[in-house]
Amino acid sequence: MSEIRVNAERCDRCGACVAVCRSARVFELGDRAAEVVRPAECWACGHCVAVCPVDVVHHSEFPLQECPTIRSLPSYEELVMALRERRSLRVFSDEPVPRETVRQLVDVSRWAPSASNRQLVDWIALDDPAQIARLSAEVTKTQGALVPLLRNRLLRPFLYLALGRENVLEAVEAADDFERLAREHAAGADPIFYHAPVVLAAHVPQGADFGREDAVYAAYNLMLAAQGLGLGTCHIGYVNAALERNQRLERILGLPQGRRVEVVMALGYPGVEFRRALPRRRMNLTWSPSQ
Image (tube, rainbow, N blue to C red):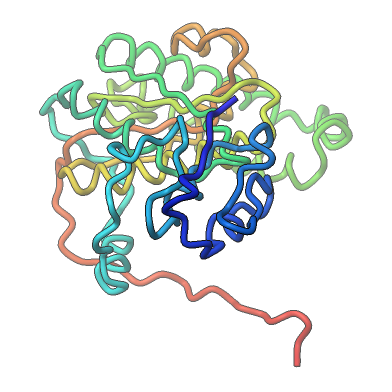
């Protein structure tokens, strides 16, 4: 259990720690100062330390010397431009990515939000070209094995029952893509990771509630940070689809027992330069209930 205390002599009873700790309700406002009444309920989110205007909340998980003061944030315009400039990269240069840079990016990803602040996401990094090629080949083979099944009309009714009609029809349309992957791989290309020098996989404990969401948040933090270091990324959904049918992929990845992969991405220095930020479809916004 975390050690939490309030310096009652310096507390100004502003109530910020009480207000911000809405779910765990660790604090209550006493006659002289805020009081720690339910320390066992603490989520270790650190909000109490972050919000206190006079730095009187002491939390064993969040020493003040490790909690820098927030001085300035990017402007709205700067943030929007950074979001618009990020693009999925599928053309990588041959320049290797230093392992220290990968560690730096993984470190940034830990500041993404996570359900109940459980922080369950960990990463696997591959930078051995032979290992990445083996993983790419296995993914291509796994996806290609579906083509005969999807093209067999006699099996179609059984697939409808097992997977649902819409899912099967969508997979049938993807059969052409699976065949293309096989052709490109046979010709020496890497249609999965595009010869990226690094492959990253975010994984969480099996059975973790909201593990997928946590991994996606962490991955997007990493993607944006990578852009700031002159790197590019691409989320590779084919790997997740193949993992559902081929456990050999877990061994190639080196996935620890009891974990599941949620996000896989390619990482490297760009082989092309993006000069313009492009428009996107405007999302429909509906107020509910409508007025």
